[in-house]
Structure formats: structure tokens, C-alpha cells
Amino acid sequence: MTATRTDVVILGGGHNGLVCAFYLARAGLKVTVLERRHVVGGAAVTEEFHPGFRNSTASYTVSLLNPKIIADMELARHGLTLVERKVSNFLPLDDGRFLLAGEGRTRAEVAKFSARDAERLREYERRLEAVAAILRDWVLRAPPNVVEGGWTAMLPELLKGASLGRRAAGLDVTGRRDLLDLFAKSAGDWLDGWFESDPVKALFGFDSVVGNYASPYTPGSAYVLLHHVFGEVNGRKGVWGHALGGMGAITQAMAKACAEQGAEVRLEAPVAEVLTDKGRAVGAVTEAGEVVRARAVVSNLHPRLLFERFVDDAVVPADFRERIGNYQSGSGTFRMNVALSERPSFTALPGAGDHLTAGIIIAPSLAYMDRAHAEARLSGWSSRPIVEMLIPSTLDDSLAPPGRHVASLFCQHVSPDLADEHRDTVADLMIETVEAHAPGFKASVLGRLALGPRDLERRFGLVGGDIFHGRLTLDQLFSARPVLGHADCRMPVPGLYLCGSGAHPGGGVTGAPGHNAARAVLRDLGRGEGRGARGE
Image (cartoon, rainbow, N blue to C red):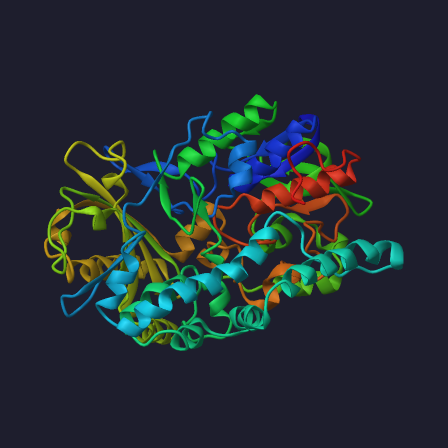
């Protein structure tokens, strides 16, 4: 059994683990990252899934990656190029009509369905952004944490709460009401109050079910909608884009930034356990028996996975252990990559065009999404599923041979417990769903990779296939993520930290949990907050 020493050992080389490693190494600490797979990046990877065809295997589009992190890590210098979709979204409808959304065209497109909705669109966007701006400010900060102890321990958290309160107080009464609505209401109720047209409501409501195994009429789903408007691409807020080379280009650039700062990333080094001594985390042991001793242990793993599989129950407080065991996870996601002999042509808008660079959403109404969720809960999947398709090869010709294309299909809803034997049945259904709007699509499929929730869990550690490392519900958000009292990335085992999407602010390729965890570690190891890891 070999043993090595480092300052910080990070469990998992997903994008948040790499962000955390970068900031820690930049502050002068010796950092070792242990990654189970043969490739760095976690769920943000680009892999060949059919001979000659490459695509982002799990995560598939970019917007939420924080601009400060992009700048600090100098990802552009390390090879990352982000390009914007030429059209944001394309909704083909059953009656042959369509709705396009994108800069300079959304209002006119909405007017095709409702002049009233077109008039309300600008005010809707303004009020949504007013709330999003407040929360965006807190992405790179730990939220107010519930702590035990006297005034010395409580004062910093009270000051955080006061700071947040001042930002909220800056809203007018309408804005404060919107803030409450977006945290507590369903997306359906929120949107029904704004718009009258079903396709228009579907355009915005789709974000509320992405990675969320729920109806758009489930209370709290409005926050999931809000979560998806935090982002930007190349300085433009609310825009979605593509990383040239796929999502793996992001994590490969991050790995280069980490290496430049001296961080070590070990591939094919699965962790067997978190090493503890007298109740404190002091390192990790790999499945090969290597011991990596460290002053701090940082986990990029799903919090349930971490505590159920790798941390000795004896050092975990009973109440925390119970609550993390009940931590809700399962996003109802079914992910597919398909290799295509030709680009699809949609009945509603035939031939080539900018609409093929968009997120193509097959979900014409909130009622459709509601039924999809209800049927999935009863039967395991919906006979009329929600499908978002991207064709990244329309923006990036490196992913497929000349004249060929790749498509990403991100599908809701299927049961998080979907059995493997149903995988192909559901995959066929997803292809048929696209075929109904783009005749010839099925015949153009040369190969495919279908990943149900269990596949996503086995391959990437996404418990229940949950792309967010836990549901974005009010009891698992902000100060309560993952458990009330541990919103500052510090786990109940001294020396153990959480840097994955199970920490604030939650899922998506943001890098924020990794940044925030680094700040906590640096402070605890007497390095202040370190150069470039300040969020305030």
C-alpha cells in the first residue's frame, strides 16, 4: 500500500472539482484530484459514441458557466471557444405552425399567436431579470447559514442575511411579490398569469421541467424556470450556446488551467473511502489501496453517494445521516446521442436554416408537459414525451464526418427507476416523437447512445439520473442545500467539504459550487480567500 501527502484531495474530476482545484492550487496549495473514469470532466465530457461521431455525452449546452470563472481560469487561452445559437428555441407544433425565439425575433413570433402576449413580453422579461439579478449576485457566495454557538459564530451569517435583505429591499413591491412567486409558485401558475397562448407558455415553461421530474404545475417549479435564466454566453445575458468540441472542451480547458497551477489530476483512480481519524477527514483511499493523506478532503460527488458509500457512519451525526438519506434526487431524464446521415427537415419549417441551431422543443403546451409527468409516474414513461433536440454539428463541424450530423436528445419524463430492459423501447419512442415532426429522421439515424437514469447514475454518479445532484425544491435550495446548517460547503465531518452540484447554487455547468468550496477551504486553512476566489 502506497501513501502520498497533499494539502487537499478532491474526490471526482467533474467541472466543479476542477474549478475548486484551480483556485486552491492558485493560492499555493498542493492539490490532488482523484477521478474514477478514464477521462476528466464528469458529466461534461465529449466522447465518440459511433465511429466518426462525437458529442457531449451528458450535459449538452452552455449558458450557466459563470463568467468570472471563465475569466479567472483563462479558459479561452486554454482552447475554449463558445458560440451562440443563431436562434434560441424552435417549437414545431402539431398543426404545422411554429414558434421561434431569439434576439430580435421573439416579439414578432409571439405576436403570431397573441398580440396581447407580444405586448406583455418585454415587461415579463424585465421583471424576471430583476429577480434573477438578485440571485445571480449570490451564485458565488455561500448563502446565510444556520449555525450553532454564540454571537461570534452567528454574526457573519446575520450579516449575510442582512446583505441579501438589502438587495431584496431594493426591489419595489412588485419585485418582492415576484420574488415570492418565483420561489413558491408553480411555473404554470406564474405563466398563466402572464400569457394566454399555449405555445408561448410552453416556450418559457419548458425550462421548469428540464432536469425536474415534476409537472410545470408542481409548486416550486417556477424556481427551476428561474434557475435557467441566470446564464450568459460571451457577455450576453440569457443566451445559450455551444462549446466548440462539445462540453468536454470546457473541462479539457479547465484541466489545462489546473495543470498550469500545479494541480495533479489522477485518472482511473476510483475512491474506496474517505479516510478519517478521530472524527476528522484526513484523506482518501483508492480502490487500488493507495492512501492520499490531506489537510482537507473536498467531494465533487453527489451528497447521498458521498455519505452512503464513502464516509464511515460512525463519524456522521445521526440527524444529518437521516436527512441526507432522505435527500430527494431523481430528475426523470433520458439522454440520447444520435449519429445522422443528414440533417433533419421539419414539416413546420422545411430545409436548412438557423432554426436548426436552436433548442428544438417538442412540447407544445403546459398541459402536454403536465400529462407527460402524470403518465410517467403511473407507467414509467410518457407515450407523448417531452423532447428537446439540439444539432450541435450545425455550429461545429468537428463532431461528425463531412455531410453528416449529430443530434442531442434530452428527454423528460421517464421514471428515475426506469429498468434497463425498457431503455430501447423508450429510445425508440423518442426517435418516433421527432419523426412525427421531421419525417425521415428515423431513417437517417446511423447509430445511437441511449442513457436512461440508471445509466447516468452508473456512468456519472448522478443518483436517480439527477443532473442537478438533487432536486431544486424549496427544502433543498439556498441555505438548505444540501441540508440546513451546511450551506457553506462544510460538511458535518471536520475537514470534509462539498464542491459538487449538491451544494449551493445547485446544478448545471456553472462552476459556482467549486468556486465557493475553494473559498471555504482557503479560509479554514489560513489562506484567506485566496487570489481570484473572492465572490464578494
